[in-house]
Length: 333
Image (tube, rainbow, N blue to C red; front, top):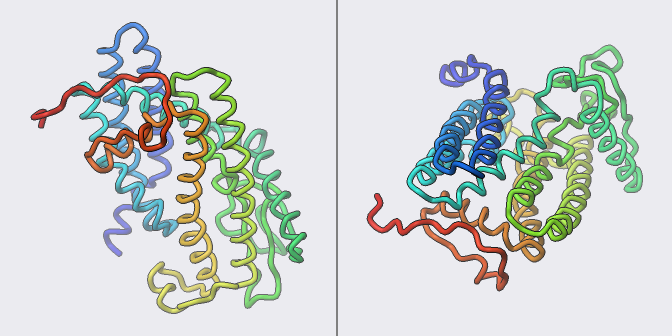
């Protein structure tokens, strides 16, 4: 508990917000400078990767202690050494990492305005996206015979809606439980994070615009629809308490005194988040069929994760435009 209190004392989100923008600026600056001075771009990009590692380090206590997400917690922990290793390999001449650098910069440029721009909370595009997803989630639930109340504001029937930041019409209220259950659609529930990952990767690679557009036209609608099904699943499982399994052990594990939260934890933090990982793998496979050039990003991610080289173009039986090859690193370490 003392360790947890020490971590949370740094207010992770207050620190990660400016760090995230510094990372995006560094990566996109490197992408521009690379056009005429690759060595200067290399230094800027390496600095960005160091900041990216610090960004994930700051977020570890948020994912682990505050929201209790196993997937995001493990991911943030793994991202720290991977980011530093990416900077190290790029510094030592692995020029294919310029593509991954550009991809992460573009991902951030797409995603960050929805979450880290002061004043955007109550106006489009964030408000419009959140309320649209909430309304479509409600419609799909009604098709399945469920009809929860969808409300706006920061409170309902005189009780504040826990964890809600903005007064959007995005909170589902489920009555008839030991206490009313409120499930709020937030920015993270809209799929914009996954869509920005795919879009950043697609836009970063060198390939004809027509095939890039086709890849986005395939991937983004699939992500959006799957995310709606994810919201429906979580809302029903949580709102109607359909996953009250191993209640006491899980309450102890996640540090809550609310037994109703167990269904949410199992539905969202376990099943939905692990399912999202597999869904992204499938969507990436579909994108590869149209845009094989994106494999350079996947290959570098696998290299950073495992330390081994992969030739996925041969494995997938596809070919794309040539990308910078990594130097012969025999004996480099």
